Length: 338
Ligand SMILES: *Cc1c(COP(=O)(O)O)cnc(C)c1O
Image (cartoon, rainbow, N blue to C red; front, side, top):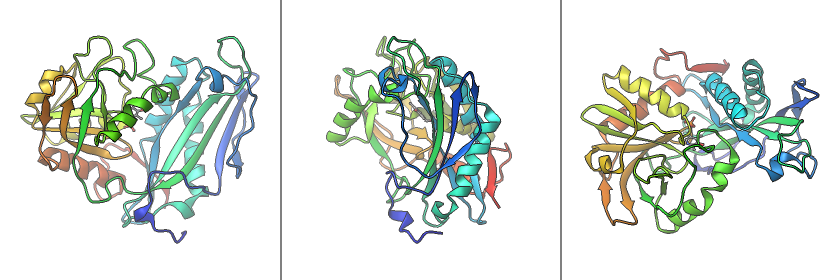
């Protein structure tokens, strides 16, 4: 293993030894290739560069307390990528091949998988791009699927804690019938400005209401939202939300822990009734919310300065499964290195 200060790594890019690639040409996906080049050469008229034909995924490999390395729900990531492909007219990448490539790239770079104690992990980034040239707005005929990995530090450096968010109605992330439900780069370009302003104002992230009516909760920046009230886990349902695998897992664990789970439209006013609230996604698992400010009405919805009991319980449970210290009763993890 590399001698690195894993615990103080940020969420940045650090080069590793290998990435894996697969190309789509003449109507089919080719053989998996191992590559040590960080760069890719492509046509300047590639559709990913001009028309945003780009899809990505994000998952992690965790070195467990038992020394084994596990990846979390990679089949779900593979299936979500296929769904994104159908959404922006790219050829679907086969699920088994996705899984094979994830295992391969993790094993090839095992020197870079942080220690269990550090709380750091190996972030896995699959991306699929249209590489064939087009000048008119049409899908490409050639594609590249690449997976690279990079070690990332623990999300909570000072320990599990809560953060503030801000509602800014002057920005939308995605339209109700747009691409918000797909994991595509374009949604992120649309969020960069709002995110930068939220940071400047001292918030962890911007908080989106639905773009059409500005009445319902959509997402917390690039994470799903949940609220907890009266032993009930409540998370929004909308056509512009990205279906988070972390959120799906938390819903299952909430049910396992005896909570009631509701997935339905959640109006902004309901924020005033939650005892706990959080953002959820692969990066943090749960990032508890201290308060949400509404920049237009001046209202502040508060959920406590420290993580609540249910959020803490759910966080520990899910992390325990990822690190192999809790039983994986749903079969969510795959041991990649024994
Ligand atoms: C990736 C992503 C999430 C989180 O999904 P996970 O599968 O839990 O990591 C949430 N919202 C958006 C917009 C995303 O792109």
